[in-house]
Length: 106
Image (cartoon, rainbow, N blue to C red; front, side):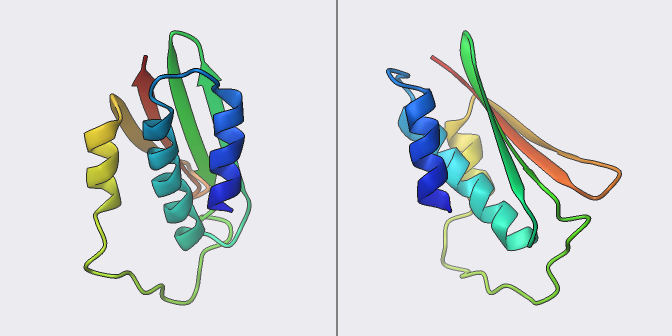
């Protein structure tokens, strides 16, 4: 799933100078969403003077029941996002769903 989303976003942003940053943050968001939800994900990409990506997951409607092993030696995804994106955040919806977003200037 992650490589497919990276290639899809790359195809939408030809010539964007920070494509590697966008792909890195997208990888972190999609991986987190997959770990948190067994349901569908929706990825949104907006490109004007800057690029905004969003990953929406349905963790509130389809919570993951089993525990997921997270390698304590793995880098902290939020630290990676904060180091690379110009701005980022997340919204929890009433349903329990979550949307993570990040913005990148040119």
